[in-house]
Image 1 (cartoon, rainbow, N blue to C red):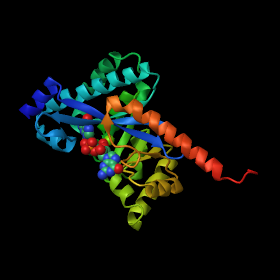
Image 2: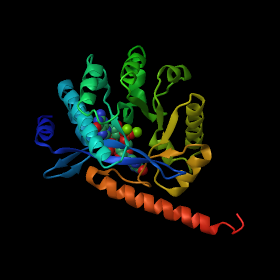
Image 3: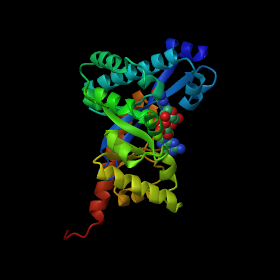
Image 4: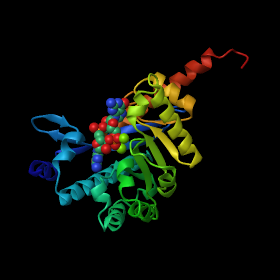
Length: 269
Ligand code: C2E
Ligand code: MG
Ligand code: MG
């Protein structure tokens, strides 16, 4: 924990960004900020190895606020380059439960007035959101009043009931990657993914598939009515300074696919 605190203060912690795209149009919808530790000896260390080391709530909050500030500063830089991408930030339940969370969020948003709060999305684990159904809907509304949006992360693992979903007014629902990865082989995963997509549609929420690795999975998701996706098959999380080049390549690749599809159509159409 002491080492993580030092890493935070010496700038060894960084954010990588994973694009979220529309599978049908290729449009880049935004990016998810994901924590990494650029460890001097061990190389790049993922959040699953960093976050469990933190037991101190103060440090967890300090880290969470750093992630928010860092993501907003990055959004400001992209905005300057004409890229008005949305960015999602993962928020730990203990951080979200701080009494002054909304006040602090407001102050952090004010440090980047060029970035509209509506372009910031806070991702809360579905399982964490369900822990306190008195508090969560109220807190989410207070944050939404500032303009920020919400996504329920790893959806399908938390046993939400329909009435919970009604009360948790998240803008998006992210289908847990375990279902997406089983979508072609496991009929239960297929059924679950289909049910979550239908549920999101019925409640008027966006639905995003996480962990899309293959074109076949993407095609199946489109068939089920889910157009928004994230996954290694689209792009791995990358350092901020690689995102603009990736976006240019992605646009060129997508344009060439459109041209190929058009070329295959009969001349009369
Ligand atoms: P998450 O928010 O559900 O993020 C998606 C995770 O799935 C990321 O792992 C990402 O690298 C990985 N992923 C994306 N596409 C694929 C794919 O196609 N296949 C596979 N196998 N994996 C894929 P990562 O970066 O290791 O993050 C793990 C979790 O750590 C995140 O899950 C999130 O819950 C948490 N986390 C990450 N950054 C932060 C942060 O800044 N703050 C907090 N509180 N939690 C964070
Ligand atoms: Mg997430
Ligand atoms: Mg997730």
